[in-house]
Length: 507
Image (cartoon, rainbow, N blue to C red):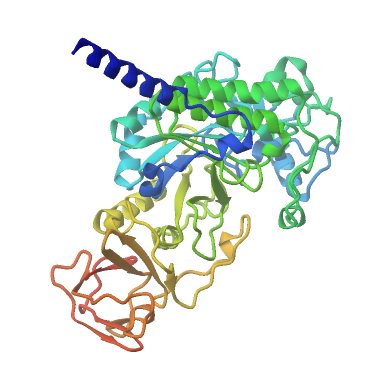
């Protein structure tokens, strides 16, 4: 008997050891073994926020930290002239008041992580977190690698740590988003007329470059032609700092998702592969399922989740993907004259994205003092009310045979979402969960009936017999007639809710 026990122990130990030995190597082939976790595919909706010293000036957009330096000595882009002139008029010359001088003004005195996390939860988000570092070089966590961080300066609080605790208390996944690669050339460190050239601020403003070494922004032509490398790769020191800060975030905060902005092609490919291997192996060690995202060609296909910015797919994809977009049409950070999207527009966007196998990461815009503007809160709560009633057609669903029907056609492309028109009652999107099919109509029809052409008797997509149809939020089941040219659903006199309307079909 002892021998049997001994053999069992050896076998179990061997199996456990095999599991422990599973490891990702820093090469694309090994990293392609990564599988997107179900929690991400189930979650569908997340929230993050652009919030940092760039929130202080409240002027035009979060690129203020870059465009403010477009001086006569640094001619770069027509857009920058407005920022430069505004800055000089409001704050003074760039050698006297540079970007670093916004940091003491970024006090976050009204920041309440509990209130933020409560709002995210009420909005229906399943994952949430802050921008951990934007292109400005200022870390929003308690960093041992740089003094330019939110714990040492500005708020003098560990923003990431406080939010991570509150978000996870509410059973949401915690995410960190990262833009540091943009720092390579973000500030004119060659321009002696500005504080950006002062060596004592190099850890904030980035490496000393020659004028023209790196330029912003990408041209539309470059993006459309899919050029993979636009400008020189950062030096070894810059690459090492990029990776070291990411490792510090991973080790200290265990994010469930790490999101990247584009331009990672300035980071040497070896460091990008090393990051993924480190992150995935760290997750294996902690029995954690994680997600990393990328744009364009920054990671090899199949090694992480593809993200598109202010955009969506025109057709359903066989792979899970993400889109990030801002609640403000004009900016990603708080500005004095925002143009907020309606809750209806965001809900329709979410439904369309989910029907095509995607998830939405919605950016919000806190003020520098830590307040979330009232119109932003109102929209988030309205989205949350819709998800409370209709979330079963979103969370945990998968795409159906077709994503939907209707006359509105999505235009694909980087930063192109504004060119996409609002949806109408003609637009219907499908999701499926188990044996239940959901048909989501993106506006209320004026005719008193809904006709879904895809589900007619002659449909090759649906050969099952429909047992019943209910409108989520309504008390009674609906009458319907399945004709050869479509499924006719007869509606109540008044709409149930104000936004997209969900029909639940059982068979």
